[in-house]
Image 1 (tube, rainbow, N blue to C red):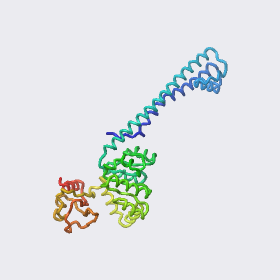
Image 2: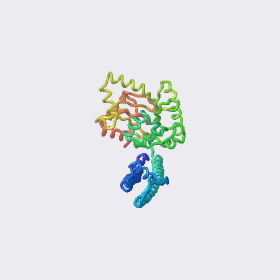
Image 3: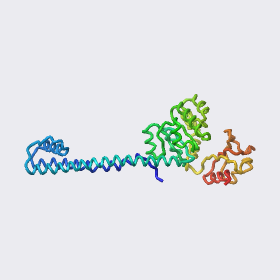
Image 4: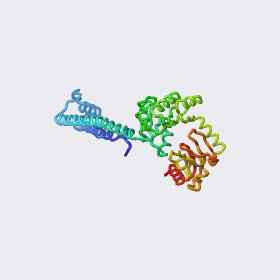
Length: 343
């Protein structure tokens, strides 16, 4: 199904208005030339007479007209009135059809949003939010953007994102974005107070949703975590750490970042959560010998409480809800994912 975006629908209506404008300009040229040739008037007088004739203002003749001049003026009046009527009809039709098209497109947009399941709600479409949305789209993860600024909302539609115009701190706006059906909530506003409020609202509307939030100030991190955010990201701290890593281990950073990009290099890094019915539950990574079975290498195990074990072969027995972080080719990772899920 194609994406309905109202901003791309204005051009046909504009093209429809070209013909009336061209007809009016042509009548002005014909009228001016006619008065110059028939009445031998100066171009200024001829142009003035043409304009007051086409506009039917009734100021009277610039100079007395003879028989041919009056006949020409009558035809010019009929042409002007007809063109004016056609132009008004076209403008009215364009306005009415534009409003109807916009209403239909908005209804289509709302219907697609209502049908979406397991998506990520992205709050804010500034520089951070736009980069976040693009990354999610590259990963193939469905998303809905919530943006309060009408100009940025238009940018969302032009970038072909599903979007909701409104304040993300309001319950009804998040509900319109399908927060109850969403898998994740990404808060990318540059206002920490609003981010805290959005996190509280999102957690109240969907207790099981996974929330990631931006934090501008270090002291805001504790407040966001207390509000129910699962992970807090500070763009400034991340930028500093990345710059330091690029200074000391630039090639390592390049390889890791490329591995995290979809289709970046042959090998990638993925995370798999073990469901209740996973055949891995109750076994150690060493017992499963997953590298021999799939070719993928398990780098770490993260338990349900978030504790990371970077030595997965140390005898820890896997439990439901644990996550395996593995590196391998896409076929190897897909095979590991299938085995982890019991498929």
